[in-house]
Structures are given as C-alpha cells and as structure tokens.
Image (cartoon, rainbow, N blue to C red; front, side, top):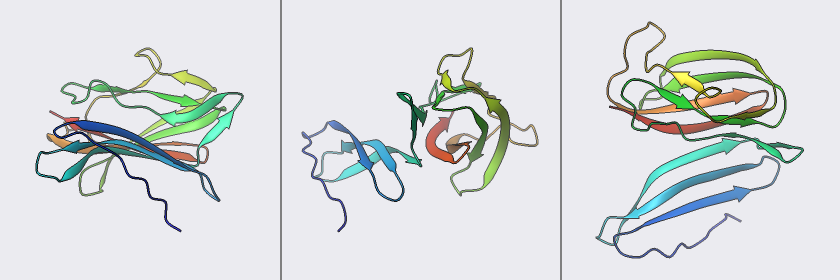
Length: 153
C-alpha cells in the first residue's frame, strides 16, 4: 500500500518534513510545504536520497549548498560513510546535464565546511557562466546518489 501521512500546517506558515522509507531500496525525501494563504500548499524544496549508506554511525548524505541562492559560486557539502569515488553533476530545469565535476576518491568522513566541501563556480562544462534560475545537483558516491536544488542569481 502507498505510504501516506497528513501534516498539520498553520495558515500562512511553513512546515518542514522528512520521510524515510526502508525496503528493497532505502531512501528519504525532505523538503517543506508552504501555505500560500488560499488553502493550497506548495512544496517549496525537496531532496531525494537514494541508497542510503550507513557505516559506523556515519551516513552518506548530500547536504544543502551554501550560499543558496548563489551569485559567484557555492559550496556543496556532503558526508561519506565509507571511502568512495565521488562525482557531482549539475542539471538545468529541463533536466539537461550542464556540468560534471569528477571529485575522485575521497576517504570516509564529513566534507561540510568550506575547506572540504565541493566548490562549484557556477560555470557549465564549456566554462560559461550559468544563466539565472533553478538547478539541480546530483552527487554520486559508489552506489549512493542524491539530488538537491539550488538557485543561481
């Protein structure tokens, strides 16, 4: 049967949610709903995480880029539960891949501060600046993948 949960939300407010699913494939979805004041709700931001990996208390996860929205570049933090070969792909709103960054082999651990996170210069594979708008970034790390969104100003 499909999973269903009702979220209570106050008028003109925002409700954060996270769902975790376990089965033949584990994943979770996070985001938030915003009441736009007319008894309709919009999902403002979502993230999809596939093949959650956990080892010795550390979970492989993609975190939110910062700053977001970004003007001159942004950092993309992540955590690895095990040593992994890491790559990052950037997609435009049409789902077209505009940039691939091969990060290479990384040791397990947290890559969450500016010194360790992936720096993305907001350029495509041809070295041109990305247009303003919504983009999606996807990390791949030895069987794990996750997608999040970012805005380029």
